[in-house]
Image (cartoon, rainbow, N blue to C red; front, side, top):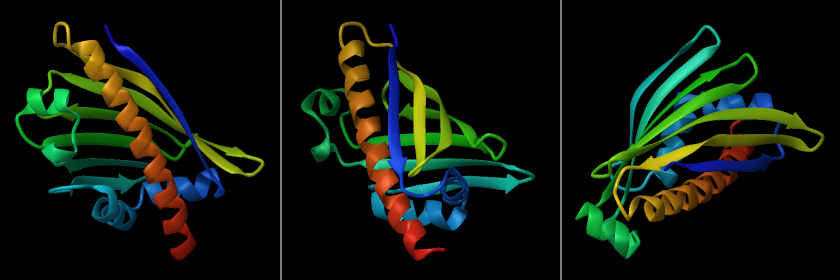
Length: 164
């Protein structure tokens, strides 16, 4: 059974400014350098005509993982993440897979202006197909995704302040 995830982050910057960062190759490389973990890489990037797609690889060392995940993976966690964005409506999709885990996260991402900046909302589901442990891992993944989105939001705000 899949676990729904919905997470909202806020920014003092407009949706257009945040979108410009999220679809900027230099920003993605900078974000990976700071937040990407071990062996982080921008694997693919295509943009133009109002749409952008990219693939990221991020890593989490085994010693920073909960014991249940360490036991399952037998090593570091490798996260492959593909995002596709369209300028119309500042909307996107995300697909995340994890090495050694028969599961994935799929969702939509939307940016919207507010009176004090903007919000980024991820709505999706986490599905792990492991009997007895799947639900626990789905919950763990959802928590970690929410924490990562919060860190990425803070990084984006700082990055935009120094990259007008």
